[in-house]
Length: 127
Image (cartoon, rainbow, N blue to C red; front, side, top):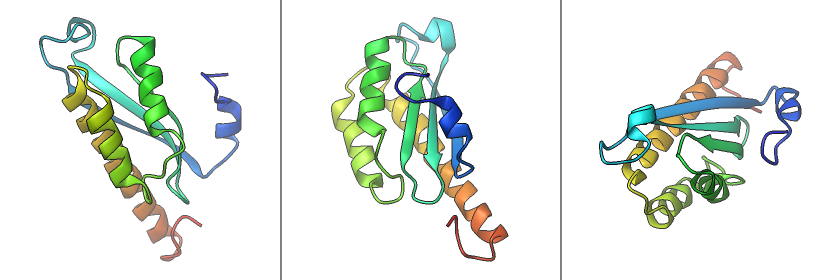
């Protein structure tokens, strides 16, 4: 069990993909000396874009759990403005800009994968 998500159940669903994004941390952030870059990883269902699990390399467990609570259960297709607004307005840590950039890169990867799958499925999308 990872957090509250059973990884084996995610692996059993071929519609769930793992996407990641990274961004440079500001020099003044405590975790900069350890990581230099902040990572965001999302497990997303291709068919509807729902984030079924999320993780980040933020330093504290509280920050990681708070990020998960902000994004899990939302759809990167239907709820994209809400996801961006939640992270922008609710995460006020010094790593906020890096977190937003890393998240945006995850979302770009998701959309690229979905488009590629749609092309392979003859334009039917990830149904």
